[in-house]
Amino acid sequence: MQTTITARPLTAQDFAPYGDVLAAEGQADKIINQGFCGRWHDRARLDFGPDGRAGISIFKAEPRSLPYTLDLLERHPEGSQAFIPISMTEWLVIVAADAGGAPGRIAAFIAAPGQGINLHRGTWHGVLTPLHAPGLFAVIDRIGATPNLQEFPLEVPRTITR
Ligand SMILES: NC(=O)N[C@@H](O)C(=O)O
Ligand code: NI
Image (cartoon, protein in one colour):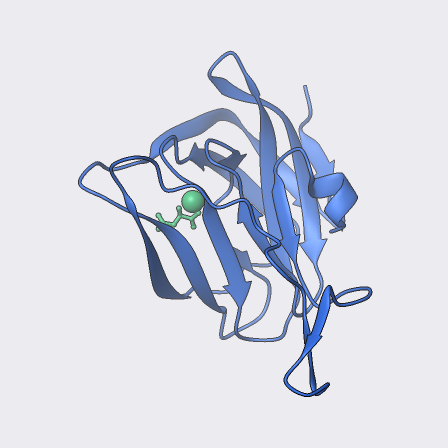
């Protein structure tokens, strides 16, 4: 069993099984606004289900420190969830593969300042984990009448290190 997981730098390629990386990285898809702005166009696979709608919320999360004890994973079976950093600091992203309806192998990433993510619908993840105050994020996820939340407490907590 993985009891200690080493976080690695967040890259779009490594994160692809779990979601999308949202950042002004590499060449812009479009140059707009009379050449004064780069647009990294349509970079997230958003999904809010047939009965939900998109919402934008602001999260202010308490910073955590490494090594971090992970004792809970969760997922949103009815929609995607995107985290766009407002405070330009690194933060911790924890995801896991699905293994028959429960979390399988866990992966951890250090998001660089300015990197955001979009978790695809149903992706197991740790809750928002900034590493520096003020931990401000814009969150785009499903607003609907159902809880859209499945939590999975870990019987054996894991240690996430850098
Ligand atoms: N519960 C909530 O709004 N946030 C969590 O889903 C999270 O991933 O941080
Ligand atoms: Ni979540």
